[in-house]
Image (tube, rainbow, N blue to C red; front, side, top):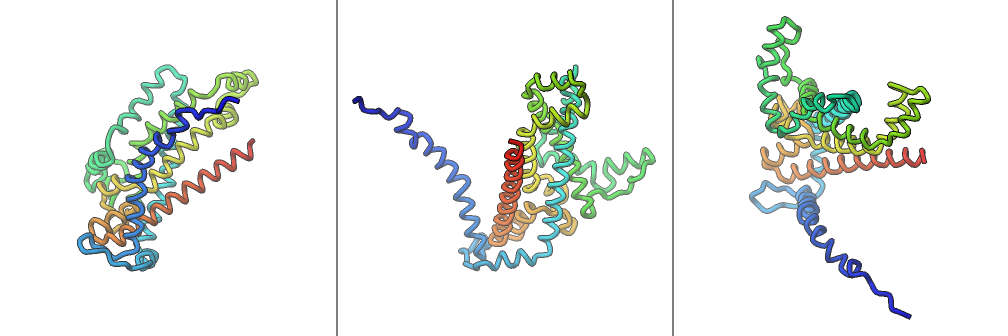
Length: 294
């Protein structure tokens, strides 16, 4: 009986994947483990870390700034799901399979080329007190000419969510267009023959077929909103009076501004746990929905 030979790929499979595993471990897992260790210490970045146990976590739970950061982070999550994702879906549906639809989406795509810092610089001239928005509203005689868009919370957070929408709407629309293009034509044509059109066609045929892509788009938006940092830091630096801080900004301020690396690492661990838990619950909910339909 001929001996069974192991394929060459099977014999060396660990050798093929080990560089990638090592790369991920060095760039992701080791820094996280180091951050988790620092969260248990008192460390200013200069002297040696001094073990402090769970004192940093106790201080975090009693920090009044934490509630503000959580509130603003929640506003970012809700605003991101309603505006960039929701409006992106609307633009995709309105421009799909329409003559000149690509040109209709182009203006929404251009802001995505800006970085978060560049986006913040552009909109700082618009939203700052006596900026472009105030002057334009005043010149047109419209209400809001004296509104301080970035001075008070939570209004400043809502204003920044609108700015984020201006940048992210286009890429979400593009992703949804890709999803629309992947839908088989047969179910749509059959529904049209049966008399379905407009909202009925979208709700009962197109939307269910797009659900896998929607899960990905919403998941990416959820994670991005939870770790928002750059646009907030450029526009307000979390102020005034820490009124617009998110968890990402709180982590940065405590670590690199206050030079409290132990406490900043605690905020980083807390943010990681919140992001991981939210992602897990969201994906678990989507899996249960898919199982229920099966």
